[in-house]
Amino acid sequence: MEKLTSLIREIPDFPRPGILFKDITPLLEDADAFHFAVTEMATRAKGLRPTKIVSIESRGFIFGAPLAYELHCGLVIVRKPNKLPHKTTKIEYALEYGVDRLEMHVNSLQKGDRVIIVDDLLATGGTAAATAELVSRTGASVEALLFLCELPALHGRQKLKDYDVVSLVSF
Ligand code: AMP
Image (cartoon, rainbow, N blue to C red; front, side, top):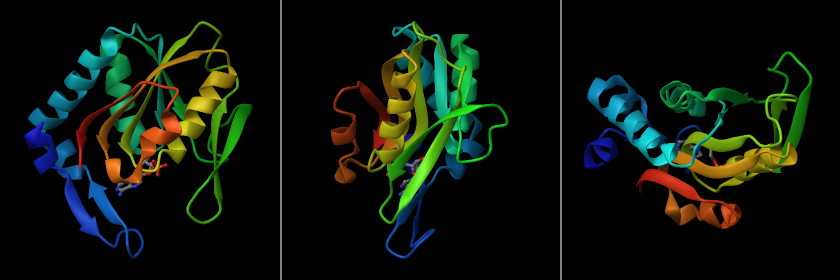
């Protein structure tokens, strides 16, 4: 895990002043570290017997796809507004300033699906909580939310109290 932490680069004031951005690209560029991160996620997810991995645009896709492949699950993508071509179900959620929206295709999940939600990073938890709500509305069950890294100082877990939350590293 220390190697993973060392390969996440901190970029001050990106994309806005005051944000310390966690840049995961050095980790992705390191074959052993990327392989280890996905394998570790798969190890933690396997026992939950997921039927679908739900990944959040855009860096969630980077981990969601190999995880779904490894666990032989379907991959569902949750996207920013107006990106998905078919009929969608939508949710709005609060940002620091204003609101944002996430969308998922209406028939991506069925009642009885066991879902693991995947993203690269848990910060305030708004994105993950909105995605969990979107998934829950379909009748599918959220078995866990899985992140590469977590910023505990932002208390994202408080918005995800009803769910199991797993992160590989935290800062
Ligand atoms: P939040 O909804 O606040 O938990 O934000 C989570 C989403 O925003 C994730 O998809 C992250 O990729 C991104 N994000 C938020 N804060 C950061 C950060 N400091 N560094 C990198 N990505 C971030």
